[in-house]
Amino acid sequence: MTPLAVVPIFVNAGAAILPAVLAGIVSLAAILFKPREWLRICRTRPAVPLGLLAAGILLWLTVGWFSRAPAASSRNNNPPTGETNWVRFALDLQQAEIRAATQPEANQSNTEATAPSLPNYFRSGPARTGHACGPSPIGLQALWEYPGEENAMMLSSPIVCGNAVYGASTVLDPPGSYGAVFRLNAASGEAVWCTTLKDPQTKKDFKGFFSSPALSADGKSLLIGQGLHLDFESELVCLDTQTGAVRWMIPTPLHVEGSPAIEGDIVVAGAGAVEKEPEHKPKGNPEKEGNPGYVFAARISDGKLLWKYPVIDPESSPAIIDGVAYIGSGVNGNAVCALRIAPDEELKTKGLDRLVWKTTTPYPATGAVSIDGDLVIIGCGKGDFVFAAPDPEGLVLALDRSTGAIRWKTVIPDAVLGAIAIRDGKAIVPVRNGEVLALDLTHNGSILWRTPLGENAAVLAAPAFTGSYVYAMNQRGYLFVLDATHGNVIERHYLNSPNNPGEQGLSLSAPFITGGKLFVGTETGGLRAFTGKTLIE
Image 1 (cartoon, rainbow, N blue to C red):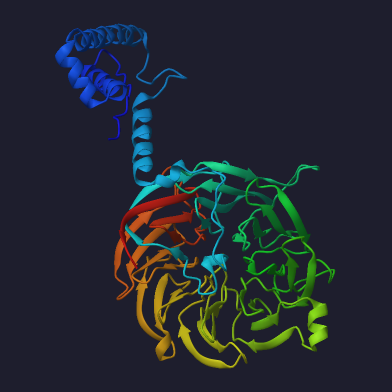
Image 2 (spheres, rainbow, N blue to C red):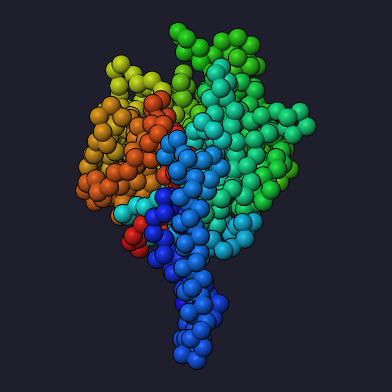
C-alpha cells in the first residue's frame, strides 16, 4: 500500500486549511503506524487520535493568525520575495509521485545504463525509425522538461539507452554559438552530467550542436559532431557516458553537422563545406575555407584517425552495413557514395579501393541515408534547413546497395531533408513543403498517403515510425501523431514554450520513442519527455 503524501498548503488571509491539516495527520498516522495498527490504537487508546486532532486544530489556528498579519500591511497581492509557493510544491510532489508509481526505473541509479543493441546511432540505426523498442504512446501527456542553459535550442535529436537520455543543445551568440552535451535520467529528466567545455584546460567552450549523438557498442562512449553550418575548425567528439568527460577529439577545418555512424570499433562522419554567397561554393584556402569537405573514420577505443576520403559537402548522416558506409553528398556534390570503412592498411592488403560506388543525384543529397534490405534510400531536393527554394523540387531515390544502380525513384513536391523512416515495407518521408508522405516499398515507392501538417510550416526533422503510428514535428514546434495506415492526424501538441514561442522555425529535433515514452527536443521548450496510453507493436 502506497502511503499518502503529507502536503503542506498554506493559504493567505485566513482561508480554511483544516482539511489539508487533517489529511496530513491521517497520512502521518498511516505512515507511522500502518492501517491495522492505527485502527487498533483508535479502539484501545482513543486519547492518541484525539490528541492529534487537537494538535491539528491548534496548528490551523496558529497558521491562520500569522497568515493574516502580513496581509493587512501588504501593498499588493504578490507573495514576498523568497516565499515558498506551496501550491506549486504540492503539484510538483504529486507529479513526482505519479512518475514514481508509473516509472519504476526512476529509482535506479543515475549512473546505470544498459549497453545498447547494435547499432545505436541516429534514429536508432540504418532503418531510421526513431523507435528503439516497446509500445507506441498515444494520448500524450508531459512527463518532464529539461530546459538546458538559458536560451538553449535543442536542434540535435536525443538518443535513449536504458535509463539514460543523451542530447545536445545550442545557444546562438552571433556571430557564433556555444553548446552543451548532456545525459539525463529518462524517468525524471534530472541531469546526470552536462559538459560545456571541450577543453577544460583552456576553458574553451563547445560550439553549437546540430549533430545528434551515437553510442558505442559497449555503451561507454558517446560520439557526436561539433559545429553549425558556418563554423570552421570543429571536431568529432568522444565523451565518457558515465562522467561526461571528453575522451578524445578529432579536429577538422570545417564542421561535423551530420550524425556519426558506428560499426564495431569504427565511427564514420562527414566534414561539411561552408559555401559562400553568391555562388554557394567554398572559397579561400583549400585546406580550410575553400575545403569542399570529406568523409573520415576513427577508432573509438583510442581516437586514432583511420582515414579521410574526399566527398563534396557530406552533411548527410551515414549508415553502415557490413563494413560499408553509405553517405550523401550535398551542395555542389549531388551524389550518394558507398565507402569501405576498413583502415587503409587492411584495404591495401586486400587490394580494395575505398570507393565502392558513387551515384549522381539530380539535387543535393543532404538527408540521412536509410537502409532497407538491399536498398539504399535517400531523399534530396532544392532548398535547405533555413531557406526554401523559389522553385522547389524533390526526389526519393532507391539505390542498389551493391552497385549503386537506381532501382526506382519517386518525385516529391519539395526537398527531403530529414531521415526517411522505414518499417514493414513502408517509408515515411518528411517534406519541406509541410507534408508527410508514406511510400510503398513493395511497389517501387508509390505514394500510399500524404498528410499536410500545417500551412507554411516545413517538416524538416525525421519522423518516428512505430508501425502503427507516425510522430512528426513541423518547424513551428507542433508535434503530430498520425495513424500509419491512412495518415490521419489523431493528435497535435505544441511543444515550444508558451511564454517564448519559437520564431525562427528551428524545430529540427526528431522524436525518439522507446519503452512507451517519447523524447524530443524543441526550439524554446527544452528537451521534453511524454508518456501516454500504449499500444504494443
